[in-house]
Length: 228
Image (cartoon, rainbow, N blue to C red; front, side):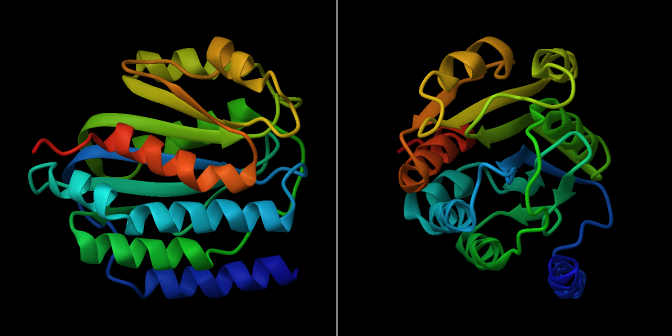
């Protein structure tokens, strides 16, 4: 109940902001950050993920990469996910074109509440939900990427390979960020059954404290390093 109240307050503040997308808009990249909040992720690990994403969007290299998109910028959304029935869009879609936009998004992500307190792990559910968000966001783009992070194999729902292939058919790339502190061979599982699409890749974090460095590198690669 407490989590739901916190989330409703957060939603109200979001809908009062000026970041709502009410009409079709074109960007260089649509990016979904799919963050694992299953039961294997404790509160400290959740906060490390949020702080890592926030820090990345404040980083001058990420800002330079966004500004190098030619003015169109990028559209970013975060989803939280656990089992096949538990996914949530956290804060809506945001258009980021410059340092001011990036700073606003960083502040939002740093304070975003944990909407889903735990559950099993359905990577397929996370991918399906992410695809639906992209198909219904009034945004057009050159590139569509789902950036899925997690610390365990799927133990709920269908095999993620089925939904990965569906995403690829729709021109969506799936990249992975695996945290291997609990499952040391998780990278191979993601390589075989999760990532895919044009330019799809995976990065490995040794633990959640390594997450911030890896998500920064990953965002730079997904957005595209600026050409000097």
